[in-house]
Length: 307
Image (cartoon, rainbow, N blue to C red; front, top):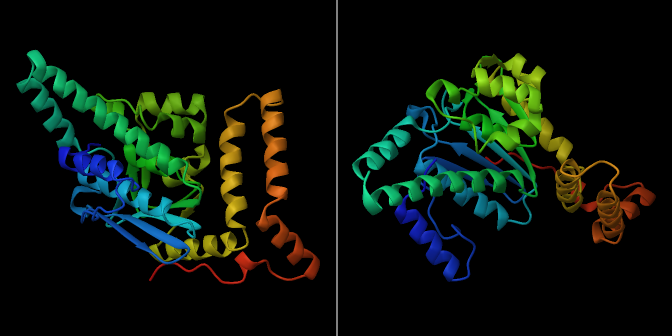
């Protein structure tokens, strides 16, 4: 996945002016972003290219992340694709362009420049995955079709994954002479090291049910209508969760998973978090609602999928 010089220049200018990166940038046609006050939908929109991740689609995802971060009322974000495929991973044409440019500039500073560009593009995608993983909202993948390579990485940074029965999942990088490097922390986090070794080293294709059994996805549905019904059910469940508490719970899992169980460090952290949330307005409102036998403020209005 790649960032163009023009997009990097604009992002740099935006940062110097003190605004969040990408906030003022127009979304490329390769990505759609629709939102109401509490729910957003991100749609990968390169159906003719199997929603492969090129520099424009990657830029679109960066802009979407910036918009989500700037929308504190958002509670649920859906990630899906347009067309028969969810995401084919990195665009092979992009890899070829980078390799060709490196070959042309194979001497002197030119080679160093190409190496730097190659490094920068990998770091940019790694940062994008980290930002998606750390979003303080419930991120749900509605995989409308097959996911491959980097597309599997997008699934693995989501909190819940629904996929269609006819789809498949493949970490096929080794078949192309590549490795699933930047997505590896999130895949390993989902399936564990032993299963990740198998999937990384064989590049085998999994049916939707196999992917579910291994933990890569959470739910398998049959039709597009079932996919949308799953979204509505997920929204109904998320409605009862206090937004601040849900965000804190997500961060809690990330911190606990990275620390040794029972360590003094994790003991202090979890105790401090519990003490902190006990004093929040949300906690006060939740306890008041329980005693009054009524719904808390955040659960009174339904969460609705953007029209």
